[in-house]
Length: 423
Image 1 (cartoon, one colour):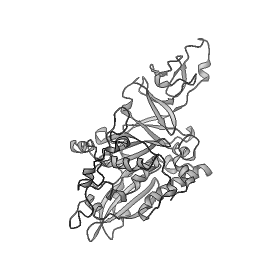
Image 2 (tube, one colour):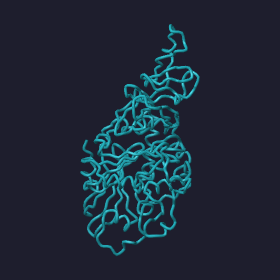
Image 3 (spheres, helix red, strand yellow):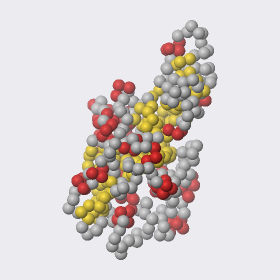
Image 4 (cartoon, one colour):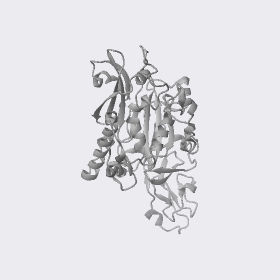
């Protein structure tokens, strides 16, 4: 259970809030690079951490992220002309570059220096890994970009998607670190379907042992969350999820398989952008792997390409199929893993009241994640202590893992090599 006060603290992300201040010490994903495909392409509306902004790619290819309202009379720069290395407000022609500097003020006398006295709020932007990142924090504390492995592999090695989710970022983040729900929400078979099976694949271990033991270890970048299930008589199956401060997770994958990453980026208190990346560190994704992704049965979901809203959504009950739910084919009757997550997370409401929860031992990772966030929020608010992860980009050079180890082998040792990213 989380107190109402702490629940408010973690879920309010706007300017001036304590959680908002923490998030602003990190680089935040805000768009796919393909949303601004060309120089001087159409501006795009962005809402990030409760701020309304406009993104544009200028004539030189540089991306700007600037306040929505023109500093002159407040007209939206979304309607602006993206031309000649700047965005020009159509109301009176004032023009701003990617740094927010006013570079032209054609309705003022030619001899006037007024344009040098006006600036628009603009934030630094970087493009890496097929994603556009923004830093909304104090300029003097701007860190390096996080060194996620997938941001360094060739484009052919990764698949990147974005979706809009209609709930607090925390509901998604908590779902990602919760490894016990996988045996239920994402199960494709009825309970005890494997009761008489003697040789199981890795996913099948989750169907057979639906009450894993949890272990959490703090790391320089966040936490390792290990879920232990029985494998064979002499072995355990370990799923090791990475929680990477403040809003990122890596989903466990068997050795040799593509790895997946999720970012739960707050649009505002009650809405978020979900960025999902699947990558292979050593080779391009093959046609079968891409086809599996685009079947939308896994961690990526089908969206409207204009709005990034999921095709299967709350308004149509995620196209729940009750006949499918009654069969052995699906525990939920909902098509894909991500859509199943959407259904339960959005069903909690925009911001769930965590003071009404009843948490058990299987919720250890959820509890630990909240504590880690609360510690970081309070350290920044009370001691002006910047989070280590934000200032040490190389800390993120890790992977998740799913491995079978002999029972006498400690997971921290047996899976150590599998969890090292090679950049």
